[in-house]
Amino acid sequence: MNTQQKDLSYFRLRLQELLNTSFPEKASDQKFIEQRSSWAANAYDGAFRSGNPIEQCNEIANYILFEGLHFSKFDTVFQVVCNEFDTIMADEELRPFALKMLPICEPLFNKYELTDDFAYGYEFNLLYTEITGNIAIWIEENGLQ
Image (cartoon, rainbow, N blue to C red; front, side):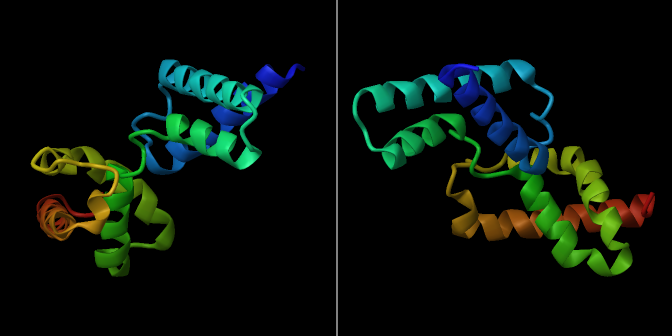
């Protein structure tokens, strides 16, 4: 296996792991995964061939690989479910329930400009509160199905 194929496989696996964990809505988008992985591998290779230190090559590749993937809607919904509703369901039900709530909460995210550092700003607290209320209303109307 040549170095380029190894790098591509490495970047593909890293991206797939992140998507499976934090961006389940993108986890099956093979075109996105292939494109990002290829770009990251090419950037790493180019940076390495230009004589950059390994750490800098990794930074360049990671920037491309994970661009726009620092704030996760799913992680936010999952955080709310774990923090606010963990007493009414078993631990193993939290993630599946958060996956179910993601499309229910999607319209709330549209009110905000979701930058990579959104989770560290004041508006995140507003969004968190809105998601909590939205989920509480949904549970009240539908139960814990």
